[in-house]
Length: 266
Ligand SMILES: Nc1ncnc2c1ncn2[C@@H]1O[C@H](COP(=O)(O)OP(=O)(O)OP(=O)(O)O)[C@@H](O)[C@H]1O
Image (cartoon, rainbow, N blue to C red; front, side):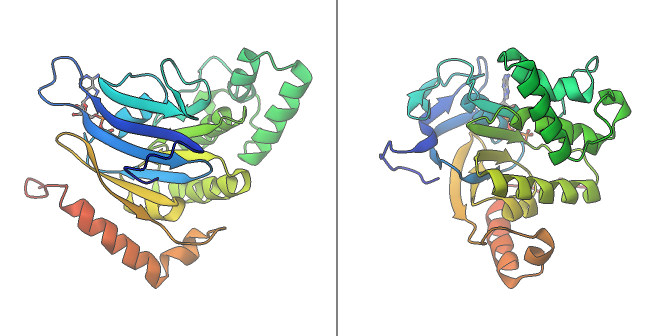
């Protein structure tokens, strides 16, 4: 992603001078944001609470419309719900009355994919996300990490052109989180789709992404776009121990810390 370029070429997603004002708010949620997400890139968006990260995803998903400026998907303005985008939110949002199998297959059912093909694809994805043996379980019978795996499979099963993830690993414990980060990394490296990933976690942004968009708040703007030069496939364990990782982390932290006010913390 880079800002202020006019080439309309092959970008998956493009924001042009986008401002969004919620009715009654004293300032815009985001203001004059221009950014581009090239196809097949993994882009992380970080920034302090309230800087507009979720708003960016909601605009890309077509759930919100800009007050000014334009949001484009594959060069076309997003004017309704973006059916090419899969959205994984912080909560797994699985349907409690459906089994793992049915939750994962939901999007295929809506798209009238024939039963046989549907079953094959569901079986494949259950295997990919490590839920074999839990096909007939209900969400309440799964751990938080398993629910998250299920929601990721549900989002990826229909080969969406772009995946939007809003802090998908936020509520998980550190070990499950690390495991799922590595799994997502492997999966994405295999599939090479376009992915926009919102996180508060600087480490996570560096492990996973090709580019990190750092946002400021009050109102939300793009402060900087940082390139992450690590080759793929990546191994989180090896990456964390490298000097380059620390350098990028420090770079990112120096940008990030000026955005957060720790003086009130107790
Ligand atoms: N429906 C709404 N109505 C009014 N204001 C809203 C609404 N949704 C978000 N906002 C405001 O817009 C700004 C951006 O919110 P957004 O949720 O996009 O931030 P965020 O960076 O994702 O925050 P967090 O990291 O805490 O989830 C905030 O000031 C928020 O209070």
